[in-house]
Length: 317
Image (cartoon, rainbow, N blue to C red; front, top):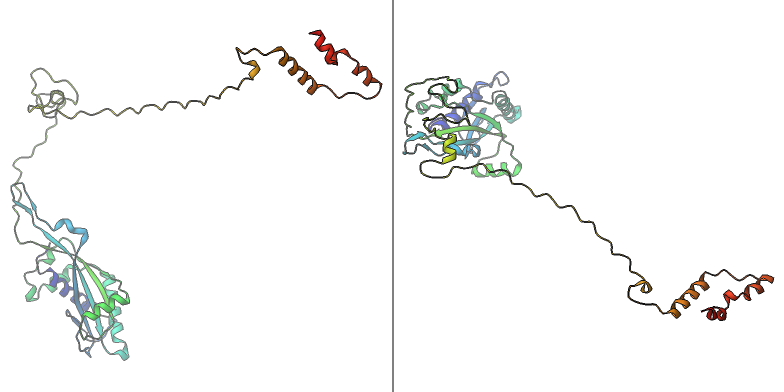
């Protein structure tokens, strides 16, 4: 955690980190300045480190409120978690591609050293305007990661810099920077006595085994089986574990009963069929099932048979 000077301290330390790692690719004097790009581009090789935006870190929103005891005593100071967004620009002779060489050195440095070293933080803290900063004692170091910006976002960013010509630049995000409040929390009370005892179940002063009945005259322990059965002194009922509800078994699917075949009218009970109808029905069946009449001499004998004559049939009845 750091105080309110942490933002300015990170900016100064980033400029020192870039300046300390220009060699050996850059063999010229380079100015590294923590300021915004100038409206008049400098002719000498120059790198500007411009903090253009400060945003809250969404992953650390739980640290922005103070932690207090029930009586209102402050236990933990509130801390604002911030992300810093830097625009790093390079200037120089375009005929020798000085600006591109400087940007290459910046990218190489922040890729090889993504975490702000403590010695660079202490070196930046020697500035008189950062003497009261405590960033070097912060538990979490600041990490730099490159930010991808498309043409539209880059145009909007440089559009905010009024009358400043565009130059080759890179954008980096520094996370995470904590800024604490000034109120001092109350220190925790010291432990007066620390002791550990190992006693077997049943020994004097030892608690009983879980679920075992207590001996006569033994005081009821809070949360013991006696309290679970009888309830506490206030008469409030203790929670009782509920048995899992039984799921009713599904009834077997009933087989669909087929409707019985419809009986013929003649076979229905209580209805007498007249003799004439029964005889005519029999003759009709006989006619339908009789074989074809033979031709030739056998045909005559078959025609004269009394069984096939309707008169003989009527006379027999």
